[in-house]
Amino acid sequence: MAGDPFTVQIIRNYLISTAQEMVDATVRTAYSPTFAEGHDFSCAIFDAEGRMVIQSRGIGVHLGSLVGAMAGIRARYQDFQEGDVVMTNNPYLATHHPDCVVCRPMFCRGRHVGFAVNIGHWTDIGGMAPGGCAGTATHVVQEGLIIPVCKLYVGGKLVPEIRDFILENVRLPEDDWGDLQSQIAATVAADTRIRALMDRYGIDAVLDGMAETIRHSRTRFLAQMTAIPNGRYMARDFIEDDGVTDRRYEIVVTVDKRDDRFTVDFTGTSEQAPTPINGTINTTRAAVYAALLALVDPRVPANAGVFELIEVIAPPGTITNAVHPAPVFGSTFEISKRVPETIIRAFADAVPDRVPAGSFCSGNNLAARFVEPISGNESLWYNFYEGGQGATAAHDGNNALYFWAGTALNQPIEVWEHKYPLLVERYALIPDSGGAGTHRGGLGTVHELRLLWDHYLSGIADRHRIPPWGLAGGQPGKPNRWCLRRDGHEEELQKVFDLPSPSKFYNVRLRAGDVLVIYTGGGGGYGPAAVRSPAAIERDLREGYTTARTGSRRT
Image (cartoon, rainbow, N blue to C red; front, side, top):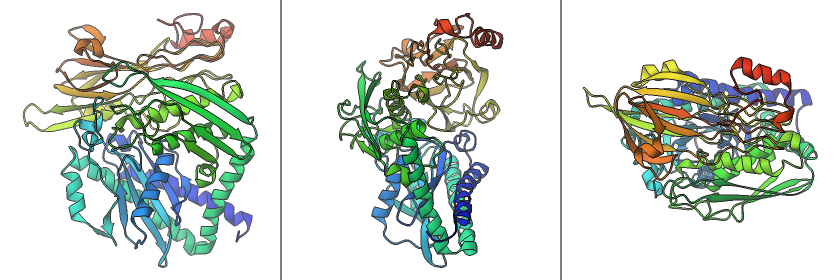
């Protein structure tokens, strides 16, 4: 390693701040609430060999998916020039259709030094359902436009035919183009900063700093792995239905932990489903990385140094490695959340101080189209919803957070009421939604949306039938639930429309004046409720978190 340790640390910190600058550039220039408010995107820097060097704080499922996407990009193109911008949303290379990858090769004084990458969720990507949430799609082509690996810009010049082809096949071309430009802006910010760093310290010193950043993560992860006993660990969980039948799909995971490696094997997992509950190998790999980073040390910078210590085995044709033409739109909503929780659960007995109880564990993704009554213009909204996290051996679960393996944010009421034809009549925590325990599960939320125009609603979610599990004697949390209030009467959507599934459906018509009520689940409790401290019980009652002196009452 060239350079002194002091300089190496400066370069490493500069790379971290560059990833954050990419995030800031995206937020400042984004067009849709999904990007600007929900932060449903991630940024990363790769070296010229395609190894991830640093990733911003972002969506956990983007970890492994960017690795797969970069491999696909480098397989498609061997030569790059300054000003190129490559993109793709191929769900079998990355995650699912709306997650569009934008990649800029970076150059300094004519030398290719790496890649700046942004992956983000476009509000619409075409397909049979607005926002893509067709819970009953049966073929990948129904889920949206698939953009192959291609150059949107060549040597700094836009290829208009590619732009036009994409924008002609989505419902919100202005939103999508605006968000795409924000992704490109993030890569420009990285390119500018890396060039400035190399001008100061030299190209070779910075490239050595990138390599050292990878080695640093590997060394630190290996050291922290010693806290996890060697051995074989197993757990299983279920996707509760496929949207067409009541069939459950089992996720089976076996983790072999050795001194220098984790091997995560999904042999025995159910075969791929005919509907979008499947995950690709990249989604599953990303979920594995997120789980093991959380278990071992979440402060380790995620990059190739960690990924090289983790082997993932997922038989093709299963819900953790679905193959064409399996629909995979729900991969980032469900598989990418259920897989890490199942892995973490496998270690509950071995390292109980590191393992939380179950969470609401679903994207609870909903999308709806609507038509302006006078102009006849069609538009749509899309959202994902936060819920309760599982309690731990030391603390109550967090309230109202998006899934723990990501850092997406809830979207402000004011933005929604300004942009969409609805009124938010209520947005609150749900008392008693967390499971009782020595430490209480986190609380879910309720959103009550009064629709001002007719809407056509589609959704993909899970944990509407099977509640989040408790640990060490803790009670389960409440499951997710979607309801409709019409003429003063509230009932579950499944019953109102006689749907096969409470959480996976397509194009259900809601009328102007209806109130869509979205209940998200609470986290599971940890430990027996009977020994919860009196002070904690009093605090819960005072804050309105619970209505029962045991700490959380199941109703």
